[in-house]
Length: 384
Image (cartoon, rainbow, N blue to C red):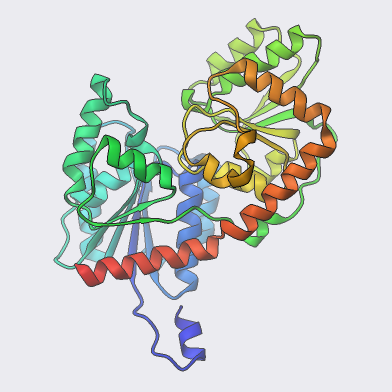
């Protein structure tokens, strides 16, 4: 922003001081924060990060270390639990101190816990509080005691938000239906990927038929993928699969594979960069029960990887004209049929992958995402 304005002889827009607050430095949320942070720094803004210190592992450490020298407002890691706890009081106080120390003008909370900290922290008049849910509390069901409690908290916190940024039209609709209509400014800004995501992926020599990449949690539907693979085996198709990631369900998922007689056909590998994981399977499967606008789908589509996904969340917004290819969630039989069809019709599957790659290249740009987020900040600052 600043360099372009100077070249054109225009007064540069104000350099903003931005703090991003989030819990776990993993998955699509972390990818979003990193892309947004890099783009904002490139445009001349001063950025800082606040994240959980107990999650992320070596990958997160490496990513944050690589960014550290460019973070004018620094990075701080504090313990942040997934659910409410006494240490959240210390967390909110920490965010309040960082706002005061850095003179931040924008506090951007990501996910349920990051959004809560950003809106509960004390800040001077004129500082805007921004919230991007990334699924988070939107996944809870209002008819469940646990879910209704968290949705009530979201409704209370909603009154302290100046800007609500939704990564999909689906997320905005769910927010309004489950929580209410925000008083602040509302914008839908799709997640985006950069040019580096569109390079081809060379299959590994030991690539399996299927690859999954993500967290080992119920919402990701890995159990459904294992059941679908078992159905294919029972039908006489010795399909192989690679499951890449980490999470609390790893032990139960491994046990499920053994019970289904898939121990020698299904391998579990630790988390690794997405493009490295894509090389480990000929067909990417995203069997999620729920999503917002998943980066893993954008990344796989950008790389031209053949892809099967469920019709959940904002995934139809990514597939667009190809949305009829999406399958229902929690349906192992439908998933097995889709996998068999994709493997049996390689030419058609490759053509569909190229078409989706072109759509993502045209409609889901990281550059556009960063510009739209910054424009939204300025609009909210002007209204504050």
